[in-house]
Image (cartoon, rainbow, N blue to C red; front, side, top):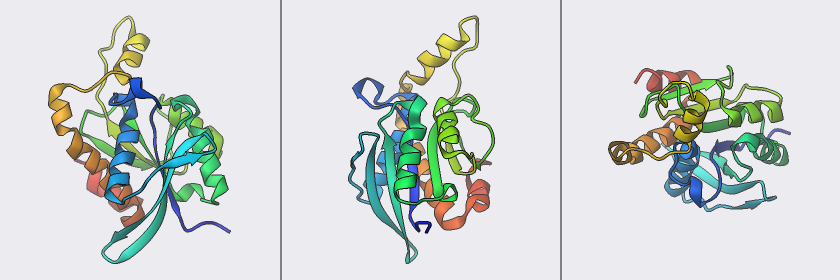
Amino acid sequence: MASDFWLIAGLGNPGRKYEGTRHNMGFMVADTLAQRWSVSFSDHKGLADLGKGVMDLNGRQVKFFLIKPLTYMNDSGDAVSSVGAYYGINPDRIIVIHDDMDLDFGRIKVKAGGSAGGHNGIRSIDRSLGTNRYARVRMGTGHAARGPHAHENTVDWVLGGFSPAQRKELPDFLADGADAAEAVIFQGLARTQELFNGR
């Protein structure tokens, strides 16, 4: 029987050296949600930090799991599929929050399905779940300069930190990402896309 829980996964890389980097945008939004709904994390099979909570909006309560995979980005699917299978959560109740270089900093796009767009965490989740039909909250980081060393530039960029101006805006941006994840649950994908994708 399918669970009535939702699963929200914020993607990132574990460890101090990755804290506060663009690639850890999903972790940061997960932490925002954890703070908002008083969720505390504990270890799930060494694969993820896992927390459980209840959202209460306008008198409607929804139970959810919140995870931060500990597998490093490229194997995020191991954590997401393990928690999903363990608790019987269908892909249509999974929301993945991740950084996206194709969007300017501060932009959010919500979608379900579609290509991984070169994001190794999403590619891993598609593979592990055997489907791409789960919701994604894409958090814009902007793009590295293109050039002869595009790949190295990209790696340095996603593992780099934010500018002072961006750091000032970051708390509001993370709160918007948390709002978007909640909206998917409470208002559905189409309405959430209307609210966030055009900003």
